[in-house]
Amino acid sequence: MSEFVYRNGVLHAEQTPMTTIAENFGTPCYVYSRAAIEQNWRAFEEQLPAPHQACYAVKANSNLAVLQVLALMGAGFDVVSGGEIARVLQAGGDAGKIVFSGVGKSRSEIEYALDAGIAQFNVESSAELERISEIASARQLVARVSLRVNPDVDAKTHPYIATGLEANKFGIPMGEAMQTYRLAAGLPGLQVIGADCHIGSQLTEIEPFLDAMDRMLQLIDKLAAEGIQLTHLDMGGGLGVAYADEKPPAVADYIQALLGKLVDHPQLALYLEPGRAIVANAGVMLTRVEYIKESEKKDFVIVDAGMNDMLRPSLYQAFHEILNVREQSPSRSKPADIVGPVCETGDFLGHNRTITASAGDLLAVKSAGAYGFAMSSNYNTRVRPAELMVDGDQVHIIRQREQLEQLWQSEHLLP
Ligand code: LLP
Image 1: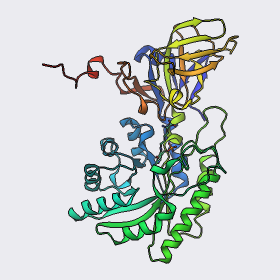
Image 2 (image 1 turned 120 degrees about the horizontal axis):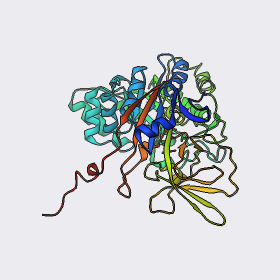
Image 3 (image 1 turned 45 degrees about the vertical axis):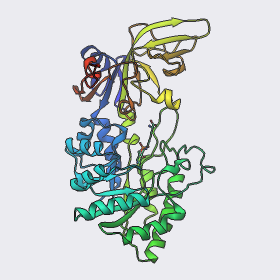
Image 4 (image 1 turned 180 degrees about the horizontal axis):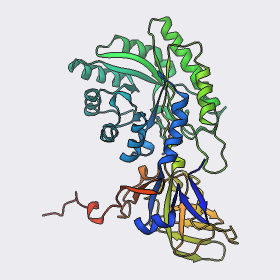
């Protein structure tokens, strides 16, 4: 159930009208629903009893309060930098439930992660294995490692996976996996516990996950035959959400299908790294219309949020539904582009929309909780927006709108 609904003609986040939020906190801003985050998390957690474990992919939305809500529910976390580890710890997350992914882990990040006592490194190359081994040995610690393998799921069969095959930078090719595991098993300071993959993001079918899982299980069986016994299988993130009319599988169906493949492997704990599925539909971006610019063929609705605040439409031509906060019948005769103030043609939030809007109206860009604020920037010297967490009829400010001076506080004039 969505936590963003119209009541008496006004869009609400839980019990709170968006109009009140805009009056009190200004625009643009991101508005998250705590109940929605919790509901989305519970859907994963309930299907994954111990030793299985869901690890929220921090990159999707790394605000401390978002991490805190999840930490309070006992979440695990998937991180891709030392900075993300620090955020998780700052928010009260359990280091013992952190998995560390990413192709380019630096020495200092590995040291930091080892000292913090994270659960496992998802290792992407032999060189990284050797680096972790060396650092762990020097500290007389043992690093638990999984190897990230590229299962090479056939993109031709499943063309909607944008990142399945192109991800050559990611993981160890399946053909090299056995020899890399042998290397890992012989290195000091390492305990080889698992296998890991991540085949792409915003997947709306279960089949590619199942294909990948079959390939990973075959690998795990071959390793077992050589005496390398794994206890963890991490199938990454990637479950899609509905931005428009996509019909992604229900979380329970997705996880049950994966668990169904494990009946012959009772020793394996299934790890998942959902990001988008936890936060995308738990957030909207609120923006105000500055001007309407009319032309013969099409109108422009110029709003106070731009590509620096919300990059997905510009970067991926991603579709986000845009609603007028005051419920309108969609009666616009000419289509309108919803555009921002940034000086780029690619600065838009939506093309060819039928939304009715006048100057001063508030618009809500839906499904903005994942990869929204997290990908924002200060381009055009624009302060990044405030972030708010609604909890029933309470609104908490979880990130202040930036102040202009903050933008140049680390810069120096020449003497
Ligand atoms: N695990 C790994 C290793 C990943 O690389 C990712 C996402 C995830 C988990 C989480 O995937 P999710 O469940 O959120 O699909 N900026 C893009 C998405 C990039 C995803 C990168 N990796 C967007 O806005 O659509």
